Image (cartoon, rainbow, N blue to C red; front, side, top):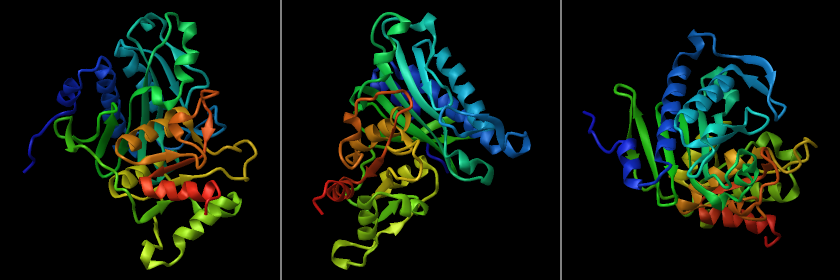
Length: 330
């Protein structure tokens, strides 16, 4: 028997934040995407559109559909004046909504797109920032601020169930969708990341393209040393949100380091504004850490909307250990 508890809408009311309706609209988008994923193979939504996004990556049909859905839904909130998305080359401004009290949202509508056609784990990542200035052409500084300026961030994971996790800086809470009545219920209150874990998540297929400090750190995790709890076990799904969610709940470390394979991506693959920064905010509020290996993710000053960074994120002690390797202390 299901026990009815706190709904997401009720929980947002207790936050008493002006941007609460923005998060409500994001949850609506999550419901729509979750529904679409369940029937994607039946309504010709699998496969590619034939186009390429600003990252030079092939666009899946569901990528484009999800992006359009979030654009319409967030516009309807009446509080969002600018959107920055993985699927859009430039920011999208809703000039009619550019007023005091408006917000800017950065988002990755479908994280883990390579998993769509094989029924794998997928996600959505979002970041909410306050609008600065009074005119639409003043939006650039709003987005290109450090991750410490986020007022809310989180993600949605689509798997055996649909779960939405978010923070406003005062705790991290997870809500699971009851598909029978279409409501998100509090299922993971006050999430705290373990100080240390037993697993690591990384695409080891890139091992020979990594820089030496990355290889040295992973080699260390794979060594047998019972006194220090090694070796760590490898867990990797190919979907950032899925690996991050497990790491947040169970501890451990996720890495997507820079490598020497693609000269177009010398600083890493993951995007700062709508992947690394929002997840870094969530992890830090839960007691973990997010780093490039050299510096805190939330302290990076963005230089472009689609800026890429290396990401090392997870349990505080595990990330600190990785930083020791990257900074030459080990």
